[in-house]
Length: 363
Ligand SMILES: NC(=O)c1ccc[n+]([C@@H]2O[C@H](COP(=O)([O-])OP(=O)(O)OC[C@H]3O[C@@H](n4cnc5c(N)ncnc54)[C@H](O)[C@@H]3O)[C@@H](O)[C@H]2O)c1
Image 1: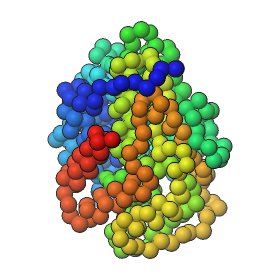
Image 2: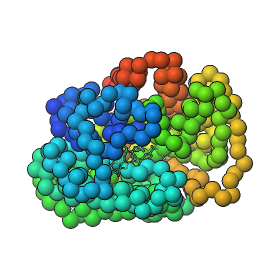
Image 3: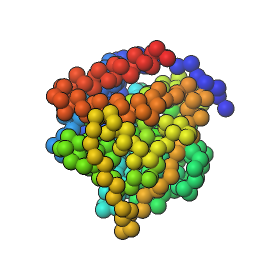
Image 4: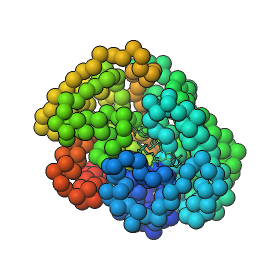
């Protein structure tokens, strides 16, 4: 086992050609912003933003990065974007990312999350300048046995719902491509990253706890919680993104030592219930009413207990979360409050990012 690595600073991305998929989504928009602020030349691949509110659109990212609106299910389209970008680094985040939607459309979920990932991997085989690819799956890729311990990277994969199973399947495809085409000496490093439930400003997805709470608060309505006792490893969006950036640098410097799966979560013992998150958001927002709904027996299955072990990323990448749970919730609520008060979103997000980077440097 390699020991903790000494990495170049994130400034190493300045001038690098980077492909980010999922740029019109929540995490991808923040990652594209971060890489652009670091001076990288970013190409984005995604579908057009969904709905009226979009962090990508509000940031004006289409003017900052080279954005390509291509469907992952189209292998030729994916290959053309990769060929145009000629990436040195790849961060694959695009996915059908919602558990509930995966029950409504399992075929599209598997086609996007499994075969879309295969299309990206296939296109990367022919990239001469590629140094590192980080492919994002999920904490839900583990076979959930509802235990209280954090899942480790070596635990069994699985998934009872189509979303979780599609992410476990994507992990297996990544493993097969790594063993078959990315393991020779001199080959670029290929790793998968499994993060916990991410919170932060700029998420407007339907059917997710933070946007649901924020929409209700902004409209002055009571916040309804349908699954208040479920626990999740909540973390601020910038935390796993920092992990992905560090992992890419580690892969580039020593591909064979880091080409494997990595967890990025808030750390064992810090998974909290949906109700506790909602109460923390209300406290930071400065008011609001909670309504706990009785459990819906007809609701599709979702895991109740889920935690991640992040010991490996700490030991070997020197990555650790910067925020505790309260700070993550407060930063999140602060973003939505400021946005509701009319602070321009590009200013708001750049300021939060600059604050996070300053805290990273000071640590
Ligand atoms: N948000 C979380 O809490 C969380 C937790 C664990 C893992 N993840 C994973 O992180 C990644 C990013 O999640 P997010 O929260 O930003 O999701 P999101 O739903 O906000 O964004 C998804 C992105 O993928 C793109 N996309 C979806 N289907 C596509 C297709 N067929 N072709 C091309 N692009 C497509 C969308 O256009 C969008 O840009 C996903 O892989 C997700 O599974 C998210």
